[in-house]
Length: 431
Image (cartoon, rainbow, N blue to C red):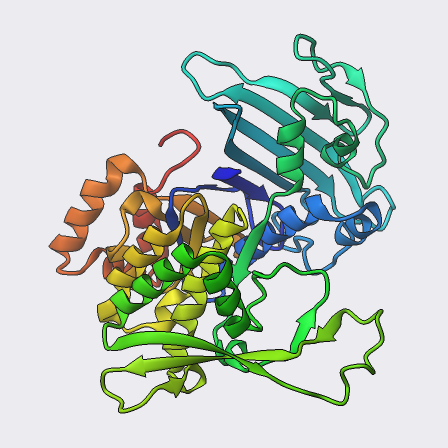
């Protein structure tokens, strides 16, 4: 599933925010405003789809997610995904979303109160067909290709219709049902990537050879080279574009023996491997290869992110989110870094967060979402309007600033400065 748009509301301090997922978009605001909350809301919303009924019940009772702001106390959680997918040489646009009430003292909450699925061919003059609809009292699905969405389905308050229809494999839109249930995102929060490079004999059970956990990167690189050599070469070339002094990266498999090998119970979530893996780097400035563990923290985080982007594409992840990528690379390399990241993406989309003016000057304005301080600390992210981009650039130039410096100067200014920023942003009535 290729993500086109995400709309989210009612999580912590997040008020309705709509993110159009081009290849790479940025959430930009001052510190401690809501960027991380928005990423966690997306992660939460996708995870909710994949969980069973009992865990869904617990998630709807998770106190750390409930909005506490005075202007939106206990506001319903709502999320919608607009996606694009191909089936039998036809491309479809898919709208799927749901809404639930957070837990309440009067026991009327912790229940799903809305769910919808609409699909249409990605062609001109096509209309969405409703395949799932649900409110607090009734739930329906479309059972035939020529019929309407009027087949009743019995569903619990803590279950989604999209989950229940996984058992209806004769439905003509079953492939779409499966793909929504398989929706996956990854939030990259490794501000310190050092632990990812240590040789580690522990392997979690029931995981693929290529995983996104980032706690055993040398093993992932070994498997990538073995299973997807063309992707491995793509990763190496991309990394060396950023750091041309590095001439080679090699991964070595080392056999290990341990007395604990036969003493670990089978029911534990991990096992001991007979091999560990070590990454070595050859650098023009050094007279011998060194372990990747000895590289700088910034270089290690960059390589980890590039690896995860490659693996995300292999595993058909819809979205990667990265917090503050500018912290891992010098400002002079940032533009090239963003370009390399975009080249690796494939069908995966990426959202980055930043409080750096440098990010802004290297992205197209319509890919920047500004977080404007609101009343009672409510966070809402809005995109820079296409029609306002020229005025924004001119205003920044007239102030003898870069676009990024100009916007951050306004963000940290007075209420009048905030009103100036709002003139550049989309509202519900403009684009």
